[in-house]
Image (cartoon, one colour):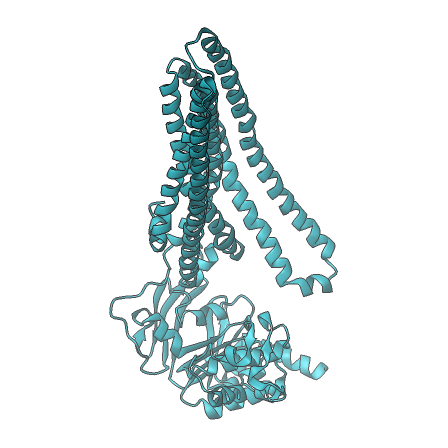
Length: 574
């Protein structure tokens, strides 16, 4: 809580107002039984109607004031609690945005979603309860105990037996429940993972007719969550009958011993009635505290998961006074070795490559040869484990990350478009881009040929994930979005795989003619996509097997020759 407390700064007024109003409500609640005893022992005993009316009006006023204080406390507590959670959620989201690919490999997407939603909501609820129940319960118990001892100190000794029993029961049960609540949040992660995976791949599920399999898989995770939740809640619920038994046992004892005192005249009937009311308030305050601690356990589990994310430092560190601009688009890999965090094996080994600014370089190799990993080191999506990557003559670790990535446009294997218009998606590349600049980029990526046919043009709506576009159209839109940045380096990571060969050739031609000063790295599975590149890098098992132009590699690289022969046979067989 010490770490999270600064997030309450914006709502400090409500955080102070809620407990203050709650204390005033407790004072009103404590006053009412006392006034009731005065009515019975003085007003009714003496037949004094004026006294009864006067004290009765005071009771009504106290009740109305207590209700008003309670309403204000509830409103302020909700503002503070959920405002607090909103501030945490905002910073948590910002933290996730700063993560490197290595950090994102550590946390699953479903887990991060649960932490941003379920865990933050739990924190908000617990904070609200902390400002109300955690204040009301102890103050009500203390004030009620004071009033009970003030009425009859000898009879109040019954609390010396009942309160320790209740406290002991609360401690034992919550000690058992705490790990169950932590496990329950983990089960929520797994259910969210199943939902996300299924909904993302729903078209694949239906095309393979695997609905029944997915339902069974979801049922297992859902049942595991249900069983863990029931186990946790059942453990806590067991506390209620124990507390109820203690409460009624205490009331019976007071009625027995208090009744004896009333019979002998050492205690008034009204005092006994108010004493029982105070007993009930004391016991109810303990029940409220137990409910609060039950939710606090969930809050602790959620808080620790939130802090785990907030405490995670990005693997990508910036130096003081970093370079703000790239001199050119030259790239040098010098003695580079790389392994993923937590892995023992290097996936890139002894990489030494020099690429001149404006050069077009193709990259090819078998699946798993670490082609994508190689180019991800350029914009620092990962950092090298050994050696260095130089861009524009400087180590990439010496650049301001934003400045570096603004000048290195990256089109990933997964083509992701976001809900909104085509124009809004294009402005991800440059938020200040004009329509003319966007259209030029669309033409270079061969996307304008279908965008121009829409009646609403750049205002054509893009569904979430680009679901209303074909695979090839999404790839061309993503390439255009990267070109809008006017980068010094553009990297296409197998980004034309869904594009037909004719359109692919047009894209390569546009790149060659219109992006002469831009360094172009093209990862491809088809040799036809890179055969006209200035040089081609052949990757094999994380190493550079060969470098050369198309004709040279046909004569010197067995791997390139094999790929070319296989693809040529495939074309001829068609």
